[in-house]
Length: 330
Image 1 (spheres, rainbow, N blue to C red):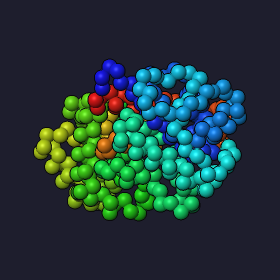
Image 2: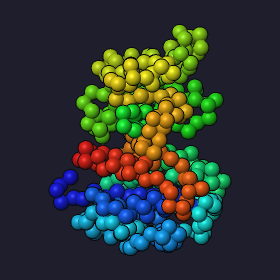
Image 3: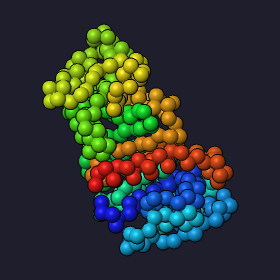
Image 4: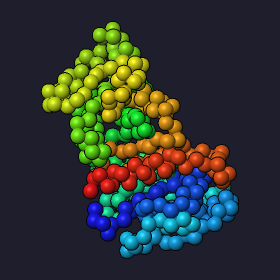
């Protein structure tokens, strides 16, 4: 990027009845070293500002304004109209098309170069599916628009965990862990650690799928038939990759102190450890896409919406990570 360019980050607040709008308004009270563009309803933000008793000046997004960073007390909004009025803490499936439109608008804006990165707030997957939309998560939705092979990685200071599979029922995971899947995920993870995070030769630890990494085939054979052969292929190519390791002992200082990332086989194998270590100070990063996308690590917190008690920690870390990734990808 040239010295004249100011990074422009789009933020989608997510579920309108949750804490996403609160986070926007709390964040707007700070000076920020980038342009922050909210993709959402200006009317909703005005309403929530009144409920939170926060003074805010909302202005419409001007794509020609490349010269100013975010100033406290202001909020720049790329307006997307709500479908139904919002009551804090009460979801309405009829607003699901609004949520999806904010995501598609931000994603397309990144593709078109209007935004340098996008950060997403929490959505309610169940409500979106109840409205008749097949929605398994941000990762998959954004990848359908951008193309690429999405790899979900969560990070907190001192730990990065990527996933071989994401939002699948437990009964379907073994069949989904194929040589093709692992080859794609490991290739993208290694590539993006080098290019997005500037780690010259990343060290990756790979979890086994089964307890004790299969116990030499006595507790499952996926390690022998699928995971180990893929790892050996990457070792032959010169990658610093270790595994498959038992997940119950991998997440210890003996291994993590020298690792740059862990590859878990499924969602609830790796993420509980990461969220225990860094909840509220973690970020969800989608690798393998032609755009930069990060997200908060928490849910909609409907019970906190409109109370002023929403915690900005994860959003600030997600924005900081997106800013770093844009600078390192330039």
